[in-house]
Amino acid sequence: RPDLHKKPTRILVLFHTTSGGTWKLAQAIAAGITQQGATAVLKQVPAIDKNIANAAPGVPYADVAELPQYDGIAFGSAVHFGNMTAAMRLFLDGTVDHWTHHRLEGVPATVFMSAGSGAGREAAILSFWNTLAVHGMVIVPTGIMGAATLQKNIAQGNTVFGATSLASMPGSARPSASELEQATLQGAALARVAIALAAVPRTVQTSTPVATTDSIAIRMNRAGIVLPPVPAPAGNYKPFTRAGNLVYINQVALKEGSILHPGIVEKEISVADATAATRQTMLNVLAVLQAACDGDLSRVKQCVQLTGFFNTAPGFKDHAKLMNAASDLTVAVFGDKGKHARATVGAASLPVNSSVEIQAVFEIE
Ligand SMILES: Cc1cc2nc3c(=O)[nH]c(=O)nc-3n(C[C@H](O)[C@H](O)[C@H](O)COP(=O)(O)O)c2cc1C
View 1 (cartoon, helix red, strand yellow):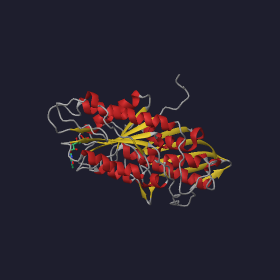
View 2 (cartoon, protein in one colour):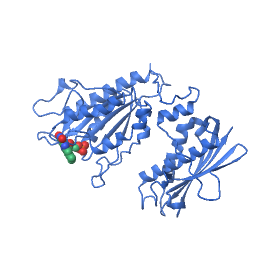
View 3 (spheres, protein in one colour):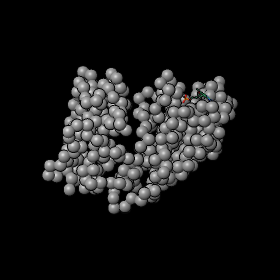
View 4 (spheres, protein in one colour):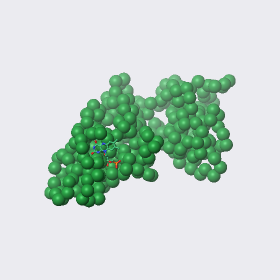
């Protein structure tokens, strides 16, 4: 009998594609995951070369910070010179903080890749595995999955390490039916391991031990949320004021001394950049809030209200979607206490050309 209260196992299918082959394999991996009753979340890593557009339009970009939230991760990449792509490499190089805090240790992972002729494709998966091993992830290989139905009259990308596609081989549309079949079985194999391991609590070790009673610190640690230093006031005012039990905070998208992604949303900067700026602004708000609580965020009783101002051109309608980055972060940190009343507003300009400004009111003990 299904346990209706059990949280579904969530698996991230994280890929980088330039001409769509890896995306097709990613969808087969996701199908295998859902066949097992787990939830597949498809995300891509951002392109680093603006001249090469990502070939999976509409698939959201992953944020390095979100990786520890998943019960398993399937990594996919095009094969570039016997390796993962530079964009995937750059993304993974951003996971140092997760590594030093053991956040991906014990998380099941698997690798699939789209190749051209297939040159170096097995070595590419094995070298991808190095990064996962350094993180202490549980690597799920494919063995001879799919062998029973393998179509032998054309060359196939199927390997014992993970599914690959031979995109430039003649003889069939790619990925071929056998390549897609192996990818589906691979997704299912990863899901089975992830479902089993999700039943066992994962201990997150940290180099600086976190008190087990401090659930906010643990939640932030698991979600990879790291608060920046408190931004210094730029005038004759204070980072926050406290009136009774209410704390008032206003911040813009300052990061390391300059504004992250300044400009007008959809005119000068993309919605993805504005979303990143919104998250950064909320991180600044939380850093100030922590200072207002003398370093102890467990003193927060509730987030009362958030107001987001966005630097938008006339006609822009998606303020609420942008603000979700701030709301989601607040709920990720405080759980139900983070749920708040909210307003969003479009502005013709904002201080220091920030694309976003957030006003926040919290109740604290
Ligand atoms: C810079 C570069 C290097 C490549 N190196 C290899 C390689 O080493 N082996 C191979 O089989 N294909 C190689 N290819 C071909 C790609 O792996 C192939 O086009 C693949 O299907 C791309 O995946 P995608 O459709 O997900 O972008 C390379 C392509 C590029 C652009």
